[in-house]
Image 1 (cartoon, rainbow, N blue to C red):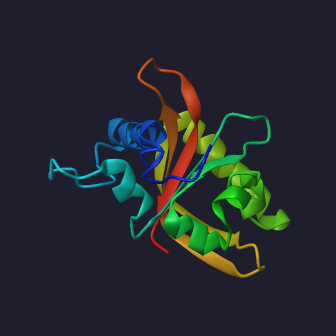
Image 2 (cartoon, rainbow, N blue to C red; image 1 turned 135 degrees about the vertical axis):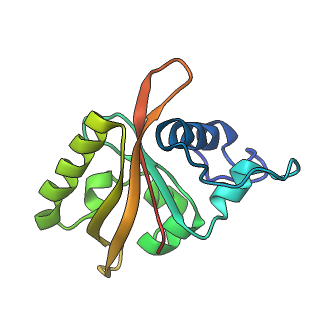
Length: 151
């Protein structure tokens, strides 16, 4: 998947999956789309909060990170979408992260996650009150999981 840009319409299809799954599960909107002229996918990519997602691989790999996420993890788009999501946590924190993902799988979403993450430079940072949700397409197929939090 290429970095969201005007050339690929800011990955509109994936952005819509993120937004519709979030709304369906939480009843809330990630992006205020009341302005009919808003490019919702661009607004998500440029948002002032982190949004990330990973796929359904046996060792899930990130498949989306908005600008805020790329900055938080100190990675380029190409580096980010090649990163197994488990590597966003230090090895000692990975069991806790796996417990979180299991809770999300069971309940659809959680909105109270707190955890320690690590950037590419080794800088650690806390995420607080993160929402983590399952990505479910319009046919009901599980497509991965996503998270959002304020940096």
